[in-house]
Each structure stands twice: as structure tokens, then as C-alpha cells.
Length: 137
Length: 145
Image 1 (tube, rainbow over the protein chains, first blue to last red):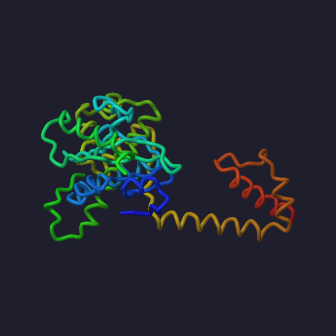
Image 2 (image 1 turned 90 degrees about the horizontal axis):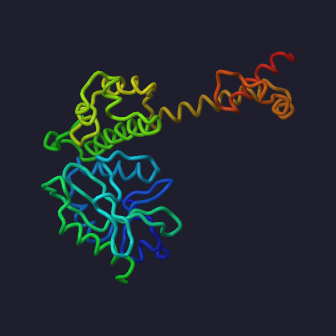
Image 3 (image 1 turned 90 degrees about the vertical axis):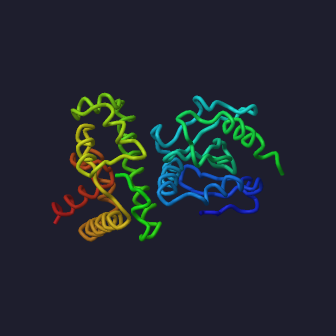
């Protein structure tokens, strides 16, 4: 884990940790979602980390590994939900310009997605978490 | 190439991450080219003579893409892929430095030659302007001797 944030870093102030960094962005994760991340096996972690690395490099990603908006929609606060995907595992979050850089903040995870469509309860919960990010502290 | 983690219980997890990461990289590579060239999966399937489902499978989590299949897909996208890594990049950069050093050594007055060798003198076969100038300097230095 990169964890290169400083005390002045807004992401860190909000309790976020940097997972992956690149020339054109970074992916951060909240403490709750980080607990889920730490449960991942190497196969899924490897796929997700590289997908995030490519996102941080500004590359265009195929729908099997990354999706933004669409059926996930927006939060009440106007944040567009996006998701990193790997083998029935989903890490949900939103993209925002933070600390002078393009930042993806992961706020929720589903490690055992059983159906193609996202669980409505999960979507509702992650939207609440996305809106709560930045307001909790 | 799909790697079941159960196959790798005895190997370092870092190895599994590296393998899976590279598989994603290959998929992103193909996707990026298709997107840039506006080639749909259906069109690639038609060009490759395979089903649309087979092409979609190339982008799935369980993709069983071989190097040969990657080369074939790249060919039908009009690309000539090369494998690159830290060492090959270092070697390539070192060759470029050696070449530039040779140009400096060959030219008695590099700055005036650099100015003289305008874009008109660029060698058609090189795509980088500095490379063209280096070729021009080497050629000029040779002709002035």
C-alpha cells in the first residue's frame, strides 16, 4: 500500500488511505473498505491493483474491470458512483478532484457478489457512505 | 490466462498478483487500441474469424488468452505489439545515450550543426525530431571531414 499521504492531505484527514498512485491520479480507500480489501486473495488483489494502476495512468478501461455511472447512478450529493471489478468482487466509490489531483475514493465493497445486477441494498449503503465521506470528521 | 489461486498455494502471492496484473494489462492494451481505432468487439471477431463471444471472453476475468491469440488479435487490429519491461526500457535508453554520445563525438561543433540541421534534414524513417537531428549531425559531421 502506498500510504504516502501527509497530514495536510484531505484524503488522509477524512480517514482515507492511498492504495495506488500514478501520474494522472490516485486511488484512496476508507478504513471500512480497507478491512474488506485486506481479505482479498492474491488473484483478485492482483487484478484490482493493476486495474487501479491503469486508472491512475489515465488509461481507458474495459467494462469488465471498471464502470462509472450507468445503473449505479449518482448519490444525493451528486457524486457519481463507479466500481472496480474482479471475479465477483466489487469495490465501489466515486471520483473527485482532491488535494490537487484526480482521486478515486473507495467507500464500500462486495466480496461475494451473487448476481449480475448490483444488490440494491449495497448500492443504497454505498451511496450513503459516499455522501458521508468528507462530512464525518 | 486465468489463474486459479488454488493452483498456487505453494508459490508467493506476489507472483500471482504479477500474473493477474499482466493479464489485466493485456486486456487494457487491446481495449485501448480498439477504442482509439473505433473497432468494436463484433468487428474484431469478424476480422479474426471467431465468435463475438470468443472476443468478449478475451476481456473477461476468466480469460484464457495465450500469447499467440494476443498476437493474432493485435495483427487484426493493425498493431505490432512488443513486450517491454524495466530492463528492456533501460537497455533502449542506454542505446539512445550511446548514439547521442557518438553524435557529439563526431561533430566538432555540435551547437552550430544542431542549428544547421533543420527539420528539412530529418530522416524520413525516424519519427522523433531529436533522432532526426542526431542522424543529421552524424551525416553532416561525416560530410565535413
